[in-house]
Image 1 (cartoon, rainbow over the protein chains, first blue to last red):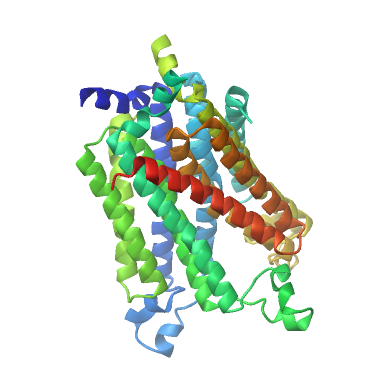
Image 2: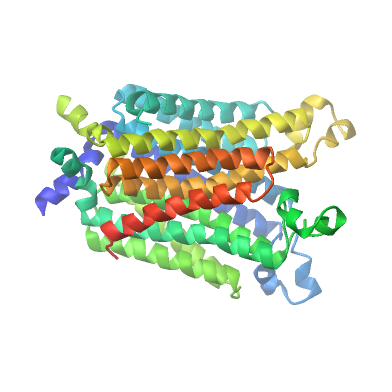
Amino acid sequence: RRGEMARSTQLIDNEVFRAFATYTAIVLLKMMLMSLITAYFRITRKAFVNPEDTASFGKGESAKKFLRTDPDVERVRRGHLNDLENIVPFVGIGLLYALSGPELSTALLHFRIFTGARIFHTFAYLIPLPQPGRGLSWAVGYSVTFSMAYRVLKTVWLL
Amino acid sequence: RRGEMARSTQLIDNEVFRAFATYTAIVLLKMMLMSLITAYFRITRKAFVNPEDTASFGKGESAKKFLRTDPDVERVRRGHLNDLENIVPFVGIGLLYALSGPELSTALLHFRIFTGARIFHTFAYLIPLPQPGRGLSWAVGYSVTFSMAYRVLKTVWLL
Amino acid sequence: RRGEMARSTQLIDNEVFRAFATYTAIVLLKMMLMSLITAYFRITRKAFVNPEDTASFGKGESAKKFLRTDPDVERVRRGHLNDLENIVPFVGIGLLYALSGPELSTALLHFRIFTGARIFHTFAYLIPLPQPGRGLSWAVGYSVTFSMAYRVLKTVWLL
């Protein structure tokens, strides 16, 4: 039993892996927050997509008018999809990167810049900030993931 | 060679990790099923989006009328996207959670509730069930992932 | 310090895991490429979705006409979403599969076929090739992930 516990906590004792776990949890929670923001705008803007979601507003035509798109809702949804497109590669490649044995300081630099860039990206999308604010924060996060992928491939390459 | 095999099966010998692997495989297969359901509705409702997909129905105007959206197809696609938005955080955070050394019974509780909630969510979306059935099942899955993230951050925190 | 390094590189020394890491990095980079292709088509077709993205084209009506959908942009976006729907399960199930101790040759077969199928799928979508080219390449990748999930569940099953 103790041996099993020891084994199971090996990875989690590694500092680079702990840093990866911390930042991954943060960016995934940030991505999950987009669902709540979407729900908030759907309810305050009264803009729904499923007929069953408007049933509490009454029946027939009175409820049907709430089946519509709203610019604010669509904006949050685009931000959410952009998170999926960028945070999924970060988590997948970041895990392999954390296991490839990088220096802790280098790894922290990657994780911190990515996380900061994605949080800035969300603000830039939702406020919205004038371009190229959103574009640059997207490019920074993208480059960090690319840099980690380069190290992973250089370290593990087995085709 | 034997040493390598032994090493490679360490994680998989851990009971919490085996439970995580089982439930992750189940929810990811469930998510993959959405592609088949989308394909089924596209073919039976004759509602396609790519011109090359309607070529077998003839050329020109006769095929063009099948390039359209269908409410049933769109409903499955929304369920599929909702899966991506919720199952991706579960898999990422759940992996870190499984490595953080939780009690097997606590871990099983998290994995079982999440998996049950997401399977219910799919039925609630596709039938569809009246609200708040779908909303509640979404919230249950969301809360499970949040609870796992809390434990991960408490255990590994290294910023 | 050395002990920690040794521990952190255990998984990465395993050949099956190295192969998984290589192919996962490749398919995730391929998926990330879709963002660049979308950006390329948005700029060359002048088809944007956020008002702040067209500010450099002038103000008012002159910029508003670039807020539109373009068939080429939408095609790349569908390919990107299809990648998310299929590459996410591959990465999640593939990780568990790599840890379940398969033969290296069997694992390489799975990873190579999946990666080849997804690269073909992207070309089939973007050129586009006549069906069933795209459909078949989708089905091949889908089947590979399904085969890995079967082995994972057979090996680890703990409900």
